[in-house]
Image (cartoon, rainbow, N blue to C red; front, side, top):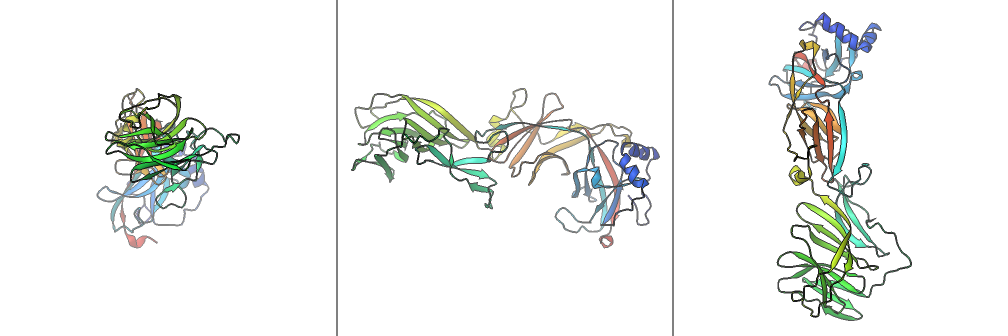
Length: 447
């Protein structure tokens, strides 16, 4: 760093300069060509980096030690002007918000980061998002329906949808069911159903019938299905269950929902096969299942479902789940370390840094954390200086990390509210710090 007269402040060791140019020959060659210094764009800062190849993160700190400006984040050395006594960069005298800083004493410092290994391990908690990262970031299924071919389709809420200021967009209708249309089996609908004040009214061959319900029960959703059956989700005193009714309103059978499972909120049925589609949900997840009737119980001799609990055998032919992951707490049950133990997020991880010849190879440690911004996730110092980018996944809700049992590998989980991404990072300690020293700043000297 230079004072107003252009003199070096603080003195620089000749051996350190020699080592710098051995490991940064491009700086020496450019200096030898007498490349003119860049036009001054603020406070000129000159510094020597640790002798390693890599990228640079650097910040400006006020007299209290608070980071006020990130000058460089994971930047290549080509972003700096090389000089005989180090590298040069500039500070325009403003903070990260673009506000001019007052006169006073400031400090410039940062880190040189060599090669680190970042590995994307898995996508978790969302069967609608593929690991190739090209599928839509489906946050939830908002609607299911039956198309003209009698097959299931639906609408998704997608993270980062175009034209939505909140970051969500209702996806256009997409086929969810894997079977293709069968034009030779055009579905015929001879029954319909309506819900009025929680009651189910079935319309069949010009006649109306009301399905039997016990006291306190109400119908949440209903639809026609194969064989002139009407399927309904019924809210009971103990939860929701699925029931089938004949066209004349008589109860036929029920589908039991296991305790603790997501509860059905929407139902659709195939008009071509004895098959139903359930959209189910609870506070933790959403599930879309296809169930096919394998063995039907004997129909009820009475129209009262409580007195004749007919239960049939169903086979789950497909199931897709979305685990809600807007917060780390929602997702924690899915997160495991490499040894199978539960993932426990750490607020900070202490790294033993690479030897730094500029500091007489003294042992140095650094506490780091993980942060998120509009561009993705990154490793940062505890005072907020971004060091290296972990991912470029936008719209992240959170990110968390923990050190593996080997003491070297860091496991990272993060989510944008649609899918949980898992990363492993090694060689994270392959960095060394540098300090450009204190300087007095006068706003009047900044153009």
